[in-house]
Length: 516
Image (cartoon, rainbow, N blue to C red; front, side, top):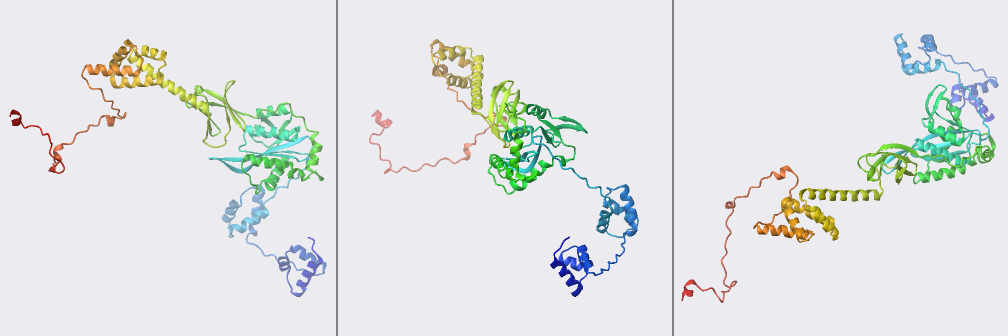
């Protein structure tokens, strides 16, 4: 450690004048004790070495060294129990420091500085940035990061999941932002890239292979537990956390992505290039752009496809939310093609519905036309069931409906009215009234009611009083017993006041007066 001349003079003054020992000088002046000894030795001062006292653990050191040589990863707690059984009287804290001193350390691994050619390689990874509240749902906020290894130009975009659709969308948008494609892309062993790996035998995700075939790049995963092989994207993620996301305020995901794009094209592109500090990342990227592979004429489709079974209600569930479908396609296997913006529901090649995608939870995204058609269908079904019931109960109802339809009578009102008359009067009475109305060529509900009342009047029967009880056996079996009126007092009659009620000027004659 190099110190100033003033500090050397201070060390010598305090040693000669105040007789401070080496340890006191090192602690008070905040320098290493080896530096103090060096200054004193250069001044010709002989420092007497301190006498190291023995430790109670010294007899157990050979056993400790031998055991750690055979089992270098044995825990200190296990070793402590072993030496306690052999008579060690000390505590665990001091012994833990002793184990750390004698535990064999593996040699530190040295790494070569990896250099790549322009346009040769890019590195891809996901990074987790907490959670984002969307309505009633909390979605993981994931950052897709792609870095060009030569220029260190990066692409950054945030998503609400790390699924295959977002993974593909990040690639397509990154290639469009770069204006080209690197020849090789390095991945960690994530499921969107590698489905299975046994040593060097790798089974890539088939969708990633389709993407690679469209853009003509070679996917290559790094070795297991060798994150240093894609250190450029790891450092880029740390750069994003510290220089972009820290204390960042944003309204929603779209606002965050707009800020991320501006930052990547601005501040991140103006930083010095690590390969050559004399030029910026932007300048290095401009030199690298011409080396990238050209983009294909059509972008790769990034829609996520899922096969679902529609329930008995006209909705299908996708990503925690329900999307409406036509009621004619319930109880069918349908296909969902979802992007980050829209959700398309397909039945083979037919598009049944197109909805805006929601990242909420338990939300219902509906097309009003789907529900209106279902309501109209239910109304028609109820009408058809009522007509069928009338046709079975009263054969003349079919002829009455035909004549009423020819005259423009409202069929719904006629159906509801006849159904109520059937419930109140019964099938035989309604059939007789229908026949009478048809003989008079009066295909109207009022005519049917007239003949029902006429037939009952001829039989001197009172018209029925419809009583609607709830469909509950407890109510229908209920017996109401009238209260005995003898328990009540008779009403009191008040005297009549002649002033309030004057006498009648023409009173009825008494029986005797009539005879007179």
